[in-house]
Amino acid sequence: MLKLKLTIFLFVLGLFLPFSLVFAGTVLSSHKYAWSDNVGYINFEGVVVGDSALSGSAWSANKGFIKFNPAQGGVLNDGTGNLSGSAWGEQLGWIDFNNVSINPSTGKFSGTATGTLVGTITFDCPNYCDVETDWRPVTSTPIVPSVG
Image (cartoon, rainbow, N blue to C red):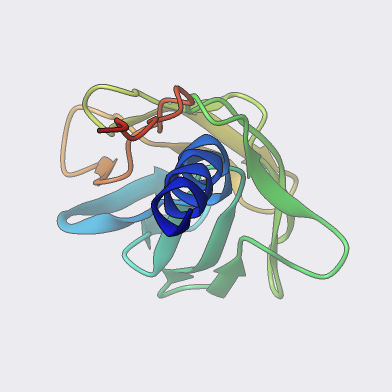
């Protein structure tokens, strides 16, 4: 009877555990700079990429921190690397990330984020601008333990 209960418990755990796990990655220290045409380089090293949202802050030496999960906004990840929503910079206002994506295979950011004060932030420019994360999408296929 105990073996049957343990088998049922492991089966139920196997069905629901993969859906409750949240994996996050960070921006790599060797690939952390984006370029803003209005404020120069922005360091994304403090940004955490999760399956559903970004958190933490990027740093502009000219205009301070840019927060990715402010109280009345935030940058969302659809789970496959397509970003949406807005980050907030105390000196930069709202920054729209709807045209930014993360390559699910390489972790490289591409596209442009825009804001009235920051102008255009480019993630994949030809010189010294390259933002990459170790985050990768999680598959949603449940792992069912074998019963034996």
